[in-house]
Amino acid sequence: MSNPRFASDNAAGVHPAVLEALDAANRGPALAYGHDAVTERAASSVRRAFGGKADVLFVWGGTAANVLGLRTVVDSHHVIYCGEQSHLWSDECAAPENYLGCKLQPVPTTHAKLTPDLVRAAIQSGPGVHHAQPRALSIAQATEAGTVYSIAELGELAQLCRERGLLFHVDGARLANAAAALQTDLREVTADVGVDLVSFGGTKNGLMGAEAVVYLTPGIVGAAEFHRKQGMQLASKMRFVAAQFEALFTNDLWRENAVRANAAARRLEAGAAKVPQVEIVHPVDANAVFARIPRQTLKRLGERFIFHVWSDHPQRPTVRWMTAFDTTDAEVDEFLAALGEATG
Ligand SMILES: Cc1ncc(COP(=O)(O)O)c(C=O)c1O
Image (cartoon, rainbow, N blue to C red; front, side, top):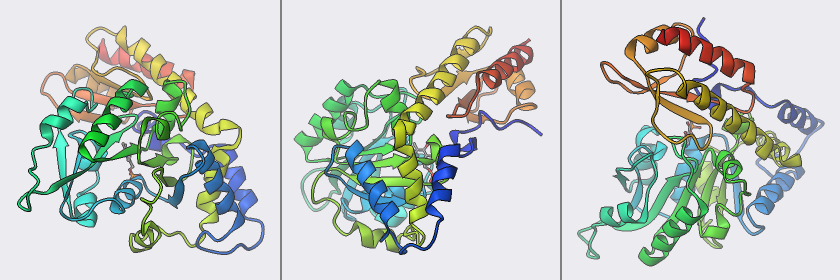
């Protein structure tokens, strides 16, 4: 059986502290649908981490966190600008189009990062009724290429959003990895730079299946609670989703996990870069390593490890190797040894 360790950060298990929190939440009855003390405490923890004032809704899935988050701020005549490689555009099975019913405009990027110039060039709608109207910018932080926007880059995008009247959404499925990489906190990469709403991921950072939609700008939460129910993401036993977040914010577990995942990726990158004919294609800022490798290496390595071929090419396909909070140095070293052997 091939080893799935580097296939995805979702291949990782659940952090033991999260399982303990689930066990603790499992003592006796509690009101359903989020009307319980655990959910209240968890929402407060998330709110505090993002600056104190946010509205917070828990859901299970990352696609849902993106789509439901955006649901409150777009109408069917709106445009959302996003990166061409974004999860929103390319990995959500048209859930945004189906559920939001508005236009998504993918923008070509380098290393999956949008810039104000790229977005400006993409905004072509006129003001009249014949054109869908610019409404939101969605970026992923960290990006799908494993790169991280700096605080300055985020500030520039926020400035553009203000100029053009766009709401600024962050797909933060890996926001913890980004904040850890920037050695800052969650608030500084979101609320403090002018982000309006965040889909904050827990699942890739040690939770079992828990994400939070964080509405930072007062008033934009709108009818989100109703949309969550309509979107089939209102957990009846909500306390077990919330308890996971409580664990994530106890002793900054979110940061500890993200630091470990990022460090494993750096170790992997450093080792892989020494293997002849292996070319790292994106800066390794967070917990993903993208590499162009010979086809023969792909074939041989693929017999031992499962990972994604990101873009196929007859001679030199590009592959993605992900690390997680529980990736050990020994696992990275074993993988690097296999990579060296496979490359000959
Ligand atoms: C950037 C990004 N956003 C969101 C998601 C969440 O997706 P899912 O609906 O599979 O939880 C993922 C998962 O791979 C992702 O990489």
